[in-house]
Image (cartoon, rainbow, N blue to C red; front, side, top):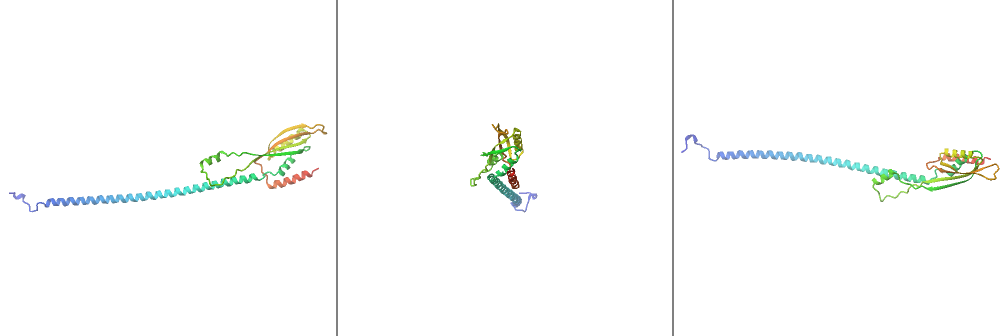
Length: 237
């Protein structure tokens, strides 16, 4: 028989059920805390992902715009190169130095006592070789097969042979010096200077060669003046 101090009026399983309810409440609270933490972490992760996607979209947009600007700049450079080549081609088809102006320049360079009786002009097509900058661009740029081929500008080397007579070699030297001082000619050299037999007074026959400067160009005003000068020289007795 139990002692009076050990007597209890509570049911036998009351304390066990109470402990079980306490344990269930603690587990529920912990579950709720874990679920709230998981939800909060998921929300933060979702927001961070959205911000990353927005930044990625902004970067992609800037990259696309930059690529379009680069492509547009490339097209403008190609157009400019095409226009420059067409301008060079058009310029090569024009006569930069009219023959009348060149003839007047040679005539005006004659010292007194010197006369000309023959002049031969020879034009040779110069082989154009692309420079290093153009070659570098062709290796880096994509070749458009649909683009029409651009005809290369033609440049010519014009050489002159001038034959005349003079009284002395000093006059021939003066004539060569004046041609060398002109901006139209370069590499003016004496080829032949011989004494003419049975001439009275003594005369010398000479042949001078010269090259027309490819960079030489004459404006229309100078051409009109040269025509007037040539007429005046022709009319001089």
